[in-house]
Image (cartoon, rainbow, N blue to C red):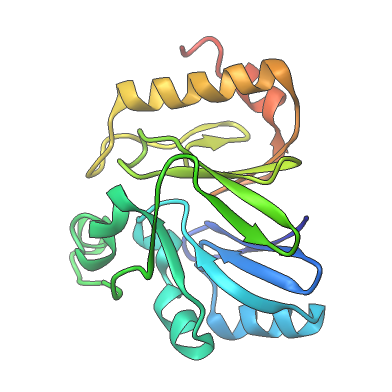
Length: 206
């Protein structure tokens, strides 16, 4: 599988196009749906679905528009499903005082689910802490970590659904993974890194 990063300016969250053959998933559509569709067209890719790493507004910002224009189903972990339809839970009201919601997800994900892309599978790793339903997407070669793990840190845990102990356990799971194999990680904010490099920087925190 291959991945394309489409960084945003306003919220500084990353949008990804994960593709295999001519099929693609868009992950965390926080950039204009027009720009996403333009890039899909340029690459000759057919959109199979929209994957969310978690339910915060800056990661779901253009999910509704992209879904409506393409008909692609929207995936989110079952524990973050409520965030899509609640401005307080998705933190939009917290930061702006306004209202922002999208329609319910089409597919609810769970730990260990596998999603097919082309002739390969993406495994869902439930990594709560930043939110109750935060996930990482594991292709076997790369790991898309959302706001669970960054190249230079980890996601905050003081918003709705955040839990520092759950986050510690989730990061511990990634530490153990790094001991067995190294791979590139693509994060919800900031630059990409390797799993070992990113987890080594956090070993003094946990």
